[in-house]
Length: 247
Image (cartoon, rainbow, N blue to C red; front, side):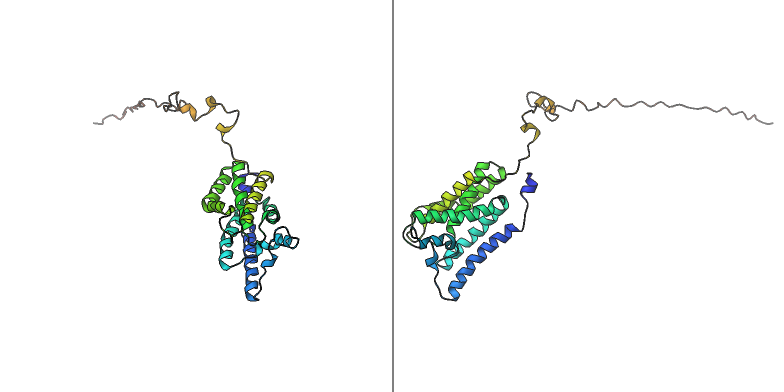
């Protein structure tokens, strides 16, 4: 697959992030509008009822600040995933929610774990490691951008604050790394220049022929040398006047 075909914009790049953001904001609006609390539908580790939180917890948030902090990363990372890894984007999203939620259910503290941050860590981890593993220059650049923008997220996989589900963050980080290792994605073929090919011969390179062994520039040997100033031959034609003088 060529780079022109692979890196092609589609409506999904905008549609999927918009749907994800709309869903989490709609659920929060319902809680505010009808004065209800749906936190009990979050992940409660090692309980049967807590398993339902694997599906529901990404849509639940405890406050406007919590919701806002997750909105921008989920939109940017989801759009990046769909654009750069569209062949596996839905797989990473759906299975990422399930695997990270299940791992949180296993290792989490006995409390309700809610929020889309687990999925955010799945996306950030997958995009970073997958780009490094592929070694494609555009995907590596994307990985570096993720580190530059969201590198500080790494600290929150550790138990720094009691009111933050670091278990969910850690689960998402591990899940993203796992997917980056084992989920195969179609990667575009990088265009190779003549000097990158195995059968490349320097002696046959037209460009290198313009340089000697010391790197000095040599004029084109095929250029036609300019000749000396041309000479002109002038020919005069004389016409005899046959008219005789009359007396």
